[in-house]
Image (cartoon, rainbow, N blue to C red; front, side, top):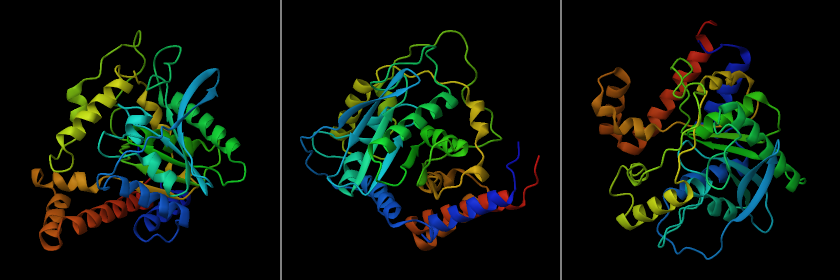
Length: 326
């Protein structure tokens, strides 16, 4: 399947490219929000506060969804966060070890955002679906219910900003494509959608399994020993396995092919993970990898990561601009 090259696609991803690299179309609140996202990953160790997030519940077609929230005294915008494949909302967005806080919810709340992170069915404190399986379309419908819930709680604010992480970014892109609920902006963090790749998870097959998550899987999220101490990693593993001892069964990834970039009509920030690609560039001999290593040698790793992200985004835009429809 080829991505469509329509005027809407050019407009959407043209805005996306300018927003990512020049900030010309990002509102002030979204700039602060993005700074909070990036800054949380770089925070120095700080004492963990005693406060816990509020636990809320939203109804999605008779199924109760757990939502974790932190609120400032006077919120200026609302944010809905969608976790990835493995770990639920509190592990992904509100993790606080014994010695340091890496809570994105707390960071965003301190910046003035009303934050809401949902546990999708089968994750954290939300029960599985009736079948036990969670498909992209079902997850998108649940996220739409959360967006409505948040909008009703903040009638005087603009529609929520939607942030999706990893698999959650594809679910968020699907929500934005469907356009059933108003959004102020969309942030796709670690977005890894390839419409030409075979679906990672196939159709429903029998009863949903109950596979335990492992400490090894939790530790594998930390790839650099210089980033996090062993105590920090130990706390993360404990939190992850406490919140999600059993893997949530997901299926039906072919539904992600319903994502249509040209249908997304809100300001969109794509965070694609150029640093991860740069770390692995020495293993490859393709022209882009060789080019990124040359830039790294001349300008250093930080500028090389920005340059690689820029080039990748330009290639994406060019693909949408010039590719022929299937």
